[in-house]
Amino acid sequence: MKIIRKLMPMIIIAVIIVVVDLLTKVWAERALAAGPIVLIPGVLEFSFLRNFGAAFGSLQGARFFFLIITAVFMAAVLYVTIKMPSDRNTEPYTSVWLSWQGVQ
Image (cartoon, rainbow, N blue to C red):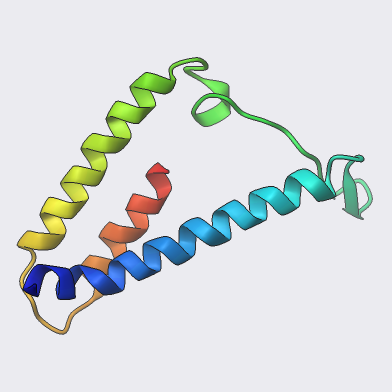
């Protein structure tokens, strides 16, 4: 029960970040399907692009590899969070759980 109480704020933050991430992706796909949105001509333009790999399209088609890496990283984040001392300092928890969001 103590572990659940310790993890609950971070789980709530993680769920909120995942939901916001998914909603922005849905919005981008719908809003940019017709074409790019130009905010500042010649300077800032949003267009829709799908990336099926990692950074800059590397490792395309390696979905199983990414699933394994994600599972290992999430297990490590949970382990570190459980082993952290229970004090009022939330910065370590926040940084660890925000890195969790970067994996997804």
